[in-house]
Image (cartoon, rainbow, N blue to C red):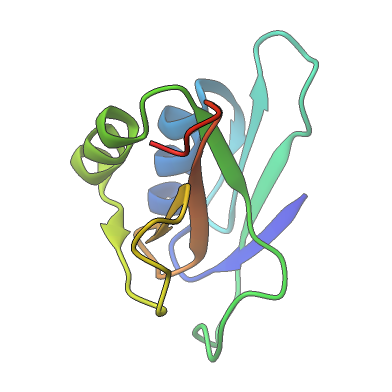
Length: 113
């Protein structure tokens, strides 16, 4: 999966830490990460001249049993919570990576907490 970005190292490092991936290759214009288990899709971050214009057409969801703790961890890594009108009782939190790409942190438990 490939992400366009203005700072591949910054965004790639965020996602590497967020997902527990390892850095495989990096250069001035790219940053490539992959799961150490080899079971998940590798991610490639490529430098492009234009900035993000709109909402992502595709985004990642991170599933967790402790959404609040995961949200706090991701904020420490550089993510932000964004408000897109998500219902108060939703079982997910919408966030943005350091360049504003949206993603969700979703609860795996039954009650949506």
